[in-house]
Length: 231
Ligand code: SF4
Ligand code: SF4
Image 1 (cartoon, rainbow, N blue to C red):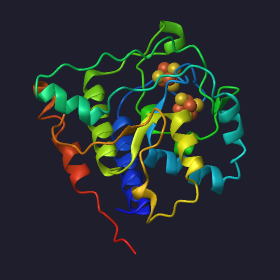
Image 2: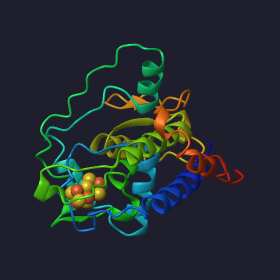
Image 3: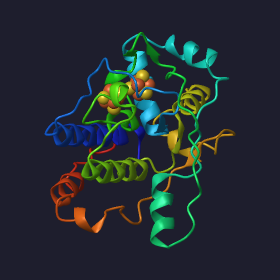
Image 4: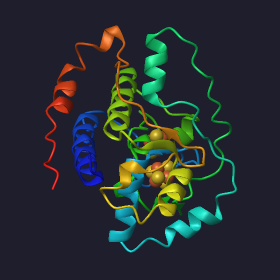
């Protein structure tokens, strides 16, 4: 599937999520950036979206800032969400992740403003809290929202078959190195020599028993997403 088609699907998914989350009373707002650390992760598909946004808004200089900050420690995931779901389903051991101390600010944050807010990855979009995290010390997320978030992570990974998953900094570096890739070639890229993980197809959904009825309308919306024709 071409990147342009996948981006269209991702856009529709974000709209479904935004509609869903708008019914919750949240403390989050655009200028609240306490949760914006260097540990944010994304798929290469979401990285393509960030690149397109940077190009269309004349902000490609931002990549220099990301580069100049790249030696700082950051979380690199050991496993993707779909791998985790499969291991859990099979009752196998799940590697213990260590995100470490999230003290450093996200490299695309400046004066509490996200430079890529419109194109921010789902990992940022779905980090929501009932109360102000700065005041309480951590986020409080409704358990059903956590379930919905996992499902969206799984679908995003699934539609980005052939792509990769990792820390925002590593994904942006990787795509910059491969920036001449056309839509047609983008899925034929070699595995990067970096901390990125290969995306996995969705095989089993992470839905606790108590959420199975409640989540049905959202699953239907995801299944009804229209896939545009490739040209
Ligand atoms: S999750 Fe917490 S820190 Fe992040 S925007 Fe929401 S309230 Fe602010
Ligand atoms: S990409 Fe934007 S929203 Fe996400 S952590 Fe960085 S500054 Fe925050």
